Length: 357
Ligand SMILES: [Zn+2]
Figure (cartoon, protein in one colour):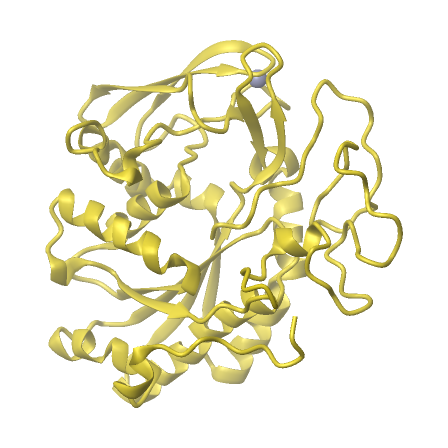
C-alpha cells in the first residue's frame, strides 16, 4: 500500500459537477417519495478502509440528495451472513462444501459481530449527517415473503434458453442441510436440484456432506434458508426492490461490481424490466494495493496486505506471530477469537474465499 491511496480517474470526472449528478435525471424525471441508499457487505472479516469508504459514500450521498432535492433519504445496510465461514472437500465426491456464517455462528453471535464491527461507524455517520439507517442481515432478507416469492417467480426464467447468460450458471441455491448443528451445503451446487411444484412453490433436493440426500419445500413463507450465488442474489434483490411506486433504491457498490452489474442488468431486462426500471447504482472507487489488487478482507487475513500495528482483523495478524501454515487447519474467523489450531475434524478448514459483496 502506498501511504496516499489513489484511485484511477474516470471519464465522468470531466462530465459531472457532482457525484449525485449520476442520479439527477432519474430523480427529476420521476421524483420519488424518498430515497434509500442500499449498501451490502459480506461480514467475513473486519471492515477495512475500502469497506468503510463504500459505506461512507452511501451516507454522504444520502445527505447530498436530501439537501439538493429536499427528499427524505436513509441508508439500508445489508449484512451478508451467507459468506462462507468454512470450506471443505467431500473426500468421496470431491465436491466442495461450505458452511456459512449464518449456520456456523447463529443469530446472536451474528448480531454481536455486526454490532461490534459495523454499528459504530453507522452510528457516527447517522449522527454526523442526520441520516437514519437500518441494518438487515441476509438471514432476515431471504426470509422475507416478497424476496422468496420473487425468486420463485424467477425460477422458470432461470433455465435454458432464457437462462443462457453466465448469470444463470448456478441458478440452484446451495441450500444448507437443515439438520440441527449441520448447515453444510455444496458450494457449487453440483447435486443440488430445484423443481417447481406450483406457481409459488418449489422443492430443493441436495446431498449433505454428513447426512446424505435431503429435500426441502420452498414457499414464500417457509422452507428454510435460501442461499443464492452472488450475481443471482443481486438479481433477486434488485428485482424485488423494483417497482413503479415507492422509494427509489440506489445500490451503492465498490468499483469491482461495474462489470457484474452489466450482467445483472441484462438478466433484469430478460425477465421483463424496461431500461428505465433498472436500479440506480453508484460505484465507489476501489482502494487497491501497490500491485493493483483490490484491498479485501481476505487479502488482509492472508497477510498479503500490510496492516498498521494493532489493526489486525482477529486472525493471522501479520507481524504478530507466526502465520499458520496453509496446510494447517486454522480457526480463521473475523470474529475476535484466538487464532489457534482447531480440534481435529473430518474436514480441513480452509480460508474463506474473497469478499464478493
Ligand atoms: Zn447435514
